[in-house]
Picture 1 (spheres, rainbow, N blue to C red):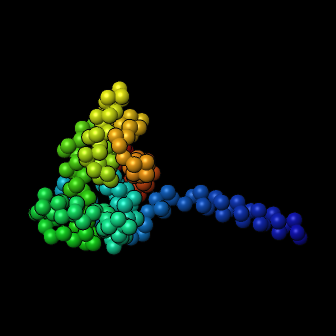
Picture 2: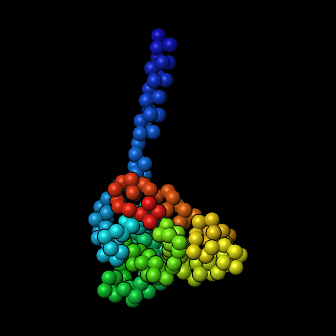
Picture 3: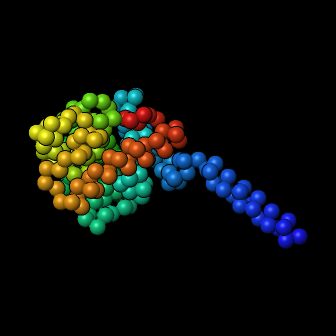
Length: 210
């Protein structure tokens, strides 16, 4: 009898392990993300065209706030896109028709701000490929365009390709603190290597590194 019970226990454990292995990767996507999918797709396509990388924007929001519309960071970043108050005011002035009044805790406003800011950065950042450009844009979103410009100049001076992020610009620090440098380098990696594939698999559309 004890042998039978042990066998059943082992079989049950194997079944549970098998079931866990079969859990879809996009199970990591928060349930509340689905309520914003349609608006994000509409906003992204209005800014970037029908081939907009919606999965990339979804991955970015995932990294920023885990889709919590009322998220607020210790340093004051707000909403789904974790936009700082000064940046929110600047974006509203830059895109008055799309953003108008500053409303960081309005999910639609926050998604519009994130997508519009990424688009603004894209017009100022050239790269070897959409994936490399996406990484540079994300670095700028996280730490500022000025730092990306300085990092690229340093990379070029050191003989690295300033138009390539991965294993090139990302290796060079033009003066950030160690903690800020680490956070900034992890930001594109997490979004493009970890989260973007999940949203692509969940049929959110294409991504820049697809």
